[in-house]
Length: 223
Image (cartoon, rainbow, N blue to C red; front, side):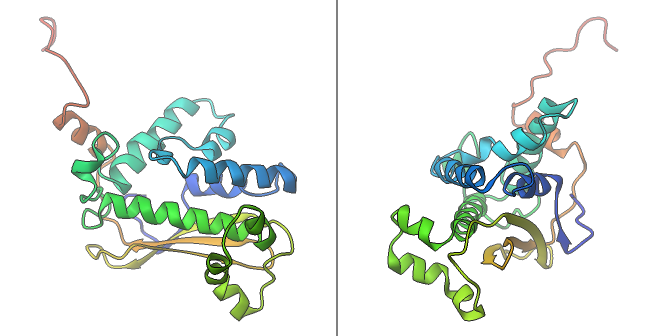
């Protein structure tokens, strides 16, 4: 997705997210449990280091460990947030990743976290939010669009579908999220500038430069 030829896209990671937060393989109660587990995970400082959706949906892949490492540690770390942010957030929180160096890594993570939480809350429905202790003020603000559109907010749990929308030219600092409950699904949208393109091994080049890859000393037999 480095060149991002389309303004509207779904990555393989987003497709796994959609399937995990659906009722394709689980019933409504298990989907609810997945949402609650995700909300708990999102309270952690490094919630982005692991993905239950990828762990579950990619479990049958022959090279799953490599796929997970390349997705989380070779794509998200580096392309979406600065490649050194996970190890030193204080130093690199104000610096962006390769896709959007002008958008601070901490902004990317804060907005993704907020958008995911709001999407899950909308998927759970209003009565579940009451049971979770969410205040009436919060719920009034959360459901503004649904009330204006006449969408029921308390008629069962909904799946979530995620999309990525390039809504601004490369180089701008636009980065927003939105979540809307509909009759059958909650739509979770991430809106960004078009990414800058990068070569497929730029993540390795960055890590080599910053000492995260150690090639050691050349052996005598090497030429």
